[in-house]
Image: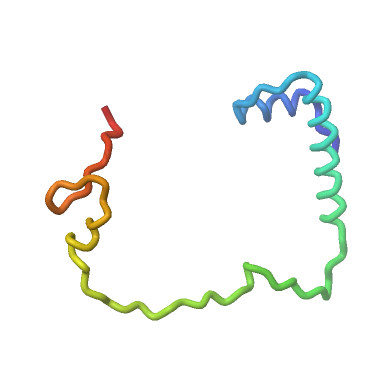
Length: 95
């Protein structure tokens, strides 16, 4: 599948990227090459092939949830750079 220069410009616009003319031509070729390869993969016969093991097929091992008492503000605020009674003081983000 051939990607046109106009399609590259549209993609760049949507991604808010500025691309010079030299790079546009290179991107046309690279994206076309990627799509051609994907097209080849789509036509590969995989009947009878078992899926490879990977993260999608792994069994998630979870630990049992246990309830522990809170250590309290004295411990949790011990290393806080700034605090006010039982609260962290942080820089204001919204003006």
